[in-house]
Image (cartoon, rainbow, N blue to C red):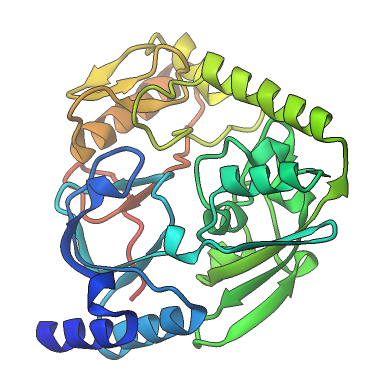
Length: 315
């Protein structure tokens, strides 16, 4: 079956775009993760749909990956097929005050295109370390802005292998959630409605937010971004700091001393190091404040640590 699966994937995406036993640490911003059985790079929505169809026919689990910025992959790796939508799936077009971006386009690149086109509204997302697909699925936000503020419509691949066009009103966008997440749709591309502005002001706002990130976030270390969701009425970083966990470490994983809301790979951290640290932070914070911290990062693969929750590949 494995040989047949490999041949079918190569027949769809091309042999050069199907990698076997590909280390996932090369494809996550945490720089952690064992190998994926198969790592596939489609270049069109038709290829993507066919790859998923093949996985379903062969009863092989599959997972959609952007640039791996909000993800912890287990040390054992990922069984099945990882389908990356990143630089291979990143076309951006500008028409008037609208920007259309494929799922693999980086938020930073879209923000630069908006700046070059004199369009305002995407500045808040310039530093969100991920792709537009993941940002739309999670209704990503930063510095007072969210995807729902500028999103107009999304093209998705649904569970039946068909393409759907969904207006913003149909997306049920909430705090780090959407109908896309709930139904397991795959984002193909998104359309954003921006406003015309002055390039100097847009650049100034982007520079301001960049400086704030550099000052407050541990960008010099590999991480998956903010580790925990914001509890209602609280800030995760402050709860962790007040619990005396600034700089707390397990193996190579560490609570950032610069921003306690970030768990960083301080040096050769394993996925198990990270999970153990997260569980300890959750336990101690709950003991001291009564607040349960919910993780914002996703987990992929099998983990040994009791209580860890894995985001499975799609069956």
